[in-house]
Length: 435
Image (cartoon, rainbow, N blue to C red; front, top):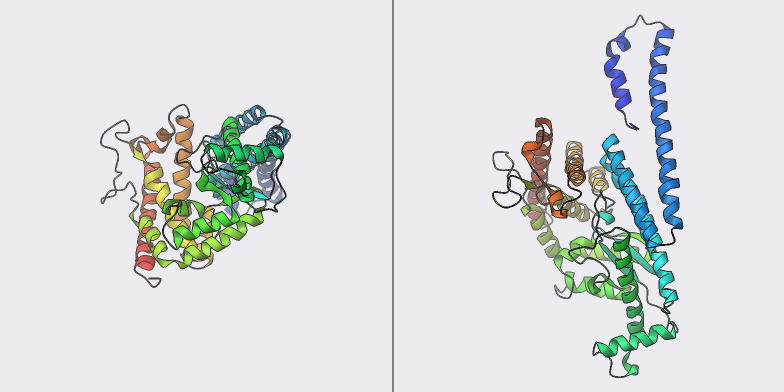
């Protein structure tokens, strides 16, 4: 499709001398520009064809799907199509955008199907407003070919007169078997509400797995109590960790929550929570200092002399983990500097651009950080394509010796950029004015 500026660049390269020729007649200039116009029109036609096929063959069918099997089929079709698109276009940002469109729609449809399941089984439709939230790469709009579930659910409290008889009976049975309930009088309306969303969230997690979203190995899913709760629950959970340094939430969970993005439901619920959360986090200098320290101490895979540090033993001998020693340090560093400066967008590239807009970083640093991000993600996508039948951990490891010299140079510069930015954090945030 070549929907980029390669046609213009090729045109300029091929006609550089003729463009400077002051003796060209008008019909000669017209002929040259007509050739460029035709090439550009073909690219635009290909683009329209691609968008129409994406809508008709994937997006529209997702929205009308009646089963999880259909959604799985459309997801696999989308992944295959987007992979082919990447091989032709080689553009990371489009890959992120396309997967956001497809996977958000799959999630929305899955939630609707689960709501119908809950109704059929006697639990009823959701008794209150809720919002299904993306975390991790899903929350940052940075998904690639491989995905897993990183989600939370936030639901609103509701009036007392809700819930089907079946829901209440099942809730009472549940609390009896777990030893919490000795008599019906002890089960509160809040218990019934919590139980509904426990069942609902558990079903959604299983159904998303069916449609092709792998379960999170770290347990960041609302089937886990930690990632499910009412607005009051979430407020208490956050305050317990940030203010009192206790509770079921841990420091890593706080970092994960900073990337929260609403996928479906009542977005105002998340907005209210996240605004309070980020202000609370930003104003707690002790917690922020711990996060800055973590960002600074995450090493890249560059040695002191600028060589790549690889594994010395084991199955990944001679390889380096580009996620752990390149991509992750960059994501964390940008995230913390953005929050410090009141930037609450979740996308890494947008965070970088907003830092430049606020004059926190210079133009050269903005360009270098974005280039570094794109290099890391591009190499991870290429690894995913090469190792799609292997373990998920295989996709984060690459052998730098197999990269051509130019690619090695770009990767080396990307890691050096991360180290320079870490130095900035160390000098200006750890030992600068904020502390």
